[in-house]
Image (cartoon, rainbow, N blue to C red):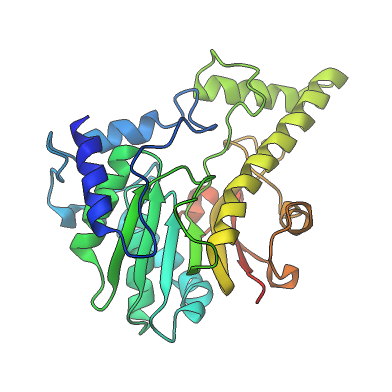
Length: 311
């Protein structure tokens, strides 16, 4: 499509010597089912012209929600300010560092994070990212290029599946983060014909069931969800420099624990995953904080996790 061609061109031209964007779009992701990305795709259409350029004044974003979050940019930025200062800035404070957001959406979360880092006095940071949805990545590239903090540098934002970042060298980025891991809404593919919400409702019904078979399926679904999160985070850990920071924001809790969300993993998953998946993570560095972006909606339902890579 026209927007896909423009997106590929933009990201190829922005690529650094170290990270070269894939020439082909990724194959369908395991979580690209039941219309999981329809909300993002429809929202993107309102922001782009037929040539793939931004269709509105880019300053308007500060008063709008973004990427499925119903909180305005400036409000979210104020909410995450202390968290970013505590967990992102230390790994970048000497200058000359790099940051990468996996699944950066339209770039709003990445941009507010960059602004906070810059306002903390950090300079000379090179910015990278990836996004699965074509038009979201195109918007992100244009937004970051238009509003990059002074002394920061554009690396590249590539179209990629977060579980396969083979275009990014191992041990290459100082801070690797994601604003949200989109979960599997039907982890075992038992309800392929159901819509997004309907498939989730079926999983919730199994959580509530007293039937042993239903409960067994619910447990298998949770294990599949954990493997999905592990695939995503394994790539994040791989590309992080030794001693660098790995940060996952807005982690949803297991669907049988919090039934008003799309599914996720418990706090206990993280130290287990370090051993189970061989992550080069200092287990003692794992820290948890309430999700800060939209506390009125998610404070009790989601959390952030930060970890330091060994080395």
